Length: 422
Image: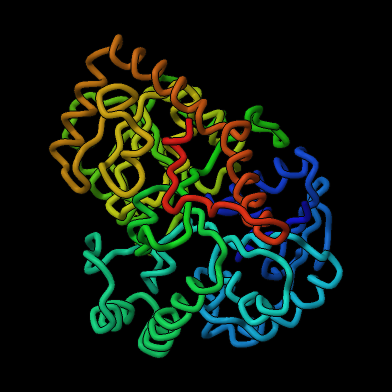
């Protein structure tokens, strides 16, 4: 099959979605498919290059000519409506690549919508965030998980996030374009059941639940020794993610302060404007590590902590920790409970509950046998999230929707869940 991925960002950026799209593209290539990627252009990066065998096109959007509107955290972002510049570039790339499948991964994929009727390609969209239901993509309202979208509530919510100039048009256009996307997409892939529910998918929508995945064999292309030298020599606790309130950083720090004699706490992630300027003693902050170094850090860590306040659609760091045999303490938020078996591979606690997090940390720190048992169980469970288990499911989605063109075929059952297929 010929597959064209459309994603806002791609390697060398190292966020969760960027890692997933790169891993998926390369895994599909190994399975005999042809894969190309379309992403936004970035300063200093080539307009076209090969990432191993994957062809990467970087296109300039019309929005990039208005950086004051379409730039956030020093990176251009795709608006929730088709960008004329991207749509024009996509048309040229479609003529060259002639794909069977268009696989979108965020709002940039909506620039394909004007071309869908004239294209013979089938349209698959992976939902990594709450892009169908939330203009902020995180389904948070006033610092807490949102009960669900309502137009006027959404309009009031986006101001602090985007600013009034951008917030209102972003919300209104996302409201309209979400309906268009639902009508045009041949199959949605939600990375968790929580993501499907949060995006408002129902049994009448065409979707399947297929999680993100880890490579079967992690290819180390970066010398990690200089990074690992920054880790404490003694056993340590590990948090990986953006150093922000929504990731539960404040909750973690408060719980950590309350534990006398706790081992060092290592925080690996991106610093934001809201990141605290000071941290408790024995907290080590490490910024912008490559994924290979993060995976090596999990191997050395005592306990992994994922204290998110926001409903994490999936939480790839949970899988990374479990694959390393590291027991996990995580909030019962979003898709995390679909990964962690509470009491078996880790401990779940209510989001934002400092005392419950403190209790869980003290319990695991005081019970070596329990840590060992949960680490072994987590490593076994992580195997179902390997590329060899997950990628064929995605490939089957492609085959199912392409099959409609040639002969009668029973539609793929709506809401089919990955775990039910094991």
